[in-house]
Image 1 (cartoon, rainbow, N blue to C red):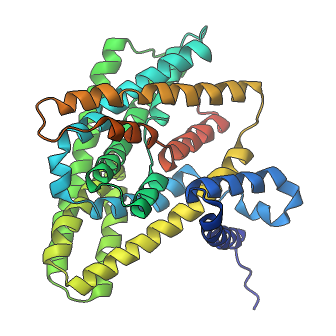
Image 2: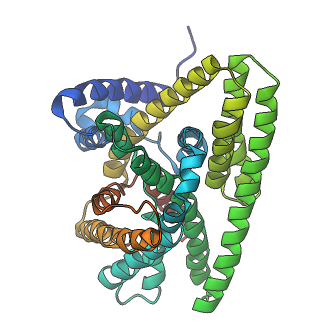
Length: 385
C-alpha cells in the first residue's frame, strides 16, 4: 500500500503498548502505576538518540491536545461516577478546598517563588502567582486507584475526588486571570492590586457562570435524549458528544470548559443513566469510560515523563525553580488543615485527623499543571511573553 502512516500514529501506538507492559509490571514491583509511567517516560527521554523510536514521541503532547482531547473524557468519567448525594453531604469541605483552598495555595506558592526565584524583579510577585495557579490543581488518579485496591472509606474517596474535580476549574480560571495581568505588563499596562482583584473577580464569575450554564443545558439535553433511546451504542455516543461538546462550546463562549464537563457529567451520571438507561446499558457505559480513562491516563503520564525531559534544560536555574516549586507546593498544601477544621465546626461527622493527613498527601499534580506549563512554554517560545 502506497499510503504511509503519520509518525504520530506509531508514536501513540508505541506509547500505548509500552504503557500496557508497565501496567503489568507494576504488580510485581509495587510502584504506583502513574509514577512508573512517568519514570519510564523520563528514561526514554534521557536515552534520546540511543532509542531511535523515541523520536516518534516528539510533539505528541501539547496544551491543545491535553485540553481538547485528553481532559474532557477524564473529567467526564470522574464526574459521571460521582454520587451527587454524597457530594452534596460534603459540599462544605469540597467547596473550601476547591475555591479558597486553590486561591490561598496559589498565593503561598507565589510568594515563596517570588522571594526565592524573582526577588528583585518588578513583576516577580505576579510571576510567582502565575506559577502558583499552575501548580494549584490536584490530580490524585494514582491515589484513587490505590484506594480501590485497599477498599478505602467511600467518604474519603468522595472528598479527594470531589476536590480534584472542582479545583481544576478554579485553577484554570485563576491562571487565565493572572496570565492577562502578566501580558498587560509586557505592553506597559500595569494593573493595580485593586484593578486585578475587581477585574479578576468579575472575570471569575463570568467564566464559571458560562461553564455552569453550558454544562447544565448540555446535561438536560443529554438526559432528554437518553430517555428516548434504548440503543446502548447511541447512549454511549451521547455521553461522548456531551463530554467533548460542552468543553468546546464553553471555551468558544470564553467560559470554563472544565466546569461545563463536570456539571454535565454529574447530571448524566446521577439522572440520565439511572432513569434513561437499562441496568445493562449502565454497566456498559461505566466500563467504556473506565477503559477510555485508563488508556488516556496511561499514554498521558508516559508522555509527561518524556516531555519533562525533552522540553526543559536541566541547568541550575531550573533546579532551583523545581525545588522551590516542590517545597512551596507542600507548604501551600498545609492549608487543608485549617480548612478542614472550619468544615468540622458543628458538623455531625467531622473529618478525622488521619483523613486530613491522607488528603494532604493525595494532592498530587497531573494533567492540568502540565497543560498550563506547555501553554506558557509555547507562548514564550513564540515570543508572546
